[in-house]
Length: 440
Image (cartoon, rainbow, N blue to C red; front, side, top):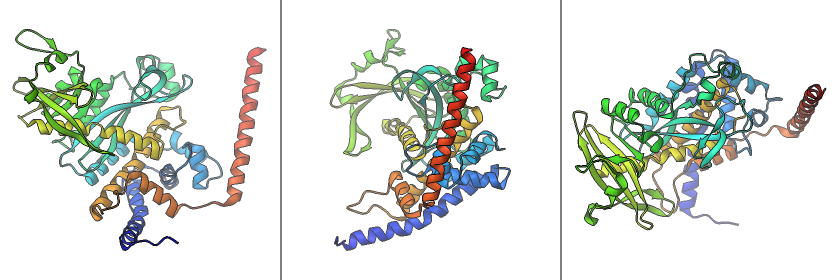
């Protein structure tokens, strides 16, 4: 028998009380963000079931596995929701953004933009093409989407998304219509998609900063838009990007070697599992005009000496420590991707059309936002206890499933086995008939 200390008993009691709040918070999130934008009560019920199932620890997440977990006899209701249900996608996305901002707060907000890719087979999935994805670090047959994360010092969540359509898609009207892409959709670069999302978010967080990697930091149009609107930013740049000097433009990496040793300051880039991650930071003045002040921020690895460079702007002068805070916040979007994929199946959809992709991504973002808000609320209600790490998003999802999972019995499991095999037999027969027709 294991004897628990009073401290462990108190911690377990606190967690037990907290867990009782989570289903109510999930229902409140769905009622606030999703259900007002669905036309029929049946659709609202199905959306609630999808979001709840997305948080289940399933080995794969698609309409089939989610429907089986939810207790449905087939995936058809979930497929109908994603492909044909009447929804207001724009209003739902705005509701998600407003909900996250309201619960995570706006003090010290950094909006972080980044893209992620899903490797695909074939060429019919909307947006799929041979293109670079950071997921594998090389050119793949994949689908790429740009996301915007709302980050504060205590929490972060995804609040907006745009599917990137390469020119091979936007220039092919028949292909677009087959995938359900609206006729009004035009080609837009990833920085332009980022600008659209940032503009919408700034209406609600006008004092926010913006962070991004090289894809966005090297785009002068995006930086120009932010400067014209007085929005501070810290975005990565290439080591070969030129910087004006009295001797003419020089690559920024050549200027880094001119920084005296006393010009470097040791600052944390954020806490990791092994403690604070310290780097050396230096600041080079760029130029000042009627819009504000510009700098180049340099980060140096204290072990390897590897350098990273950042375009920086602020409408008024700020200390270098503020720029470092914004720079290190950029990695929160990577955590959001990891949680969105690992906890809610952001990258596991098996849908091909425009509407289905939009719906799946939005529902995943709602599910992850709930977990992020839940974790923040618990950190406020139960401050850090010595001997225990704080509740993480992963732990909250694990506890919810263990405490509130509903079993559907062996008959349900066996019925799904029959459904899968019968559907597979039908599909196999169709493929064989199609091949025979082509060969004849």
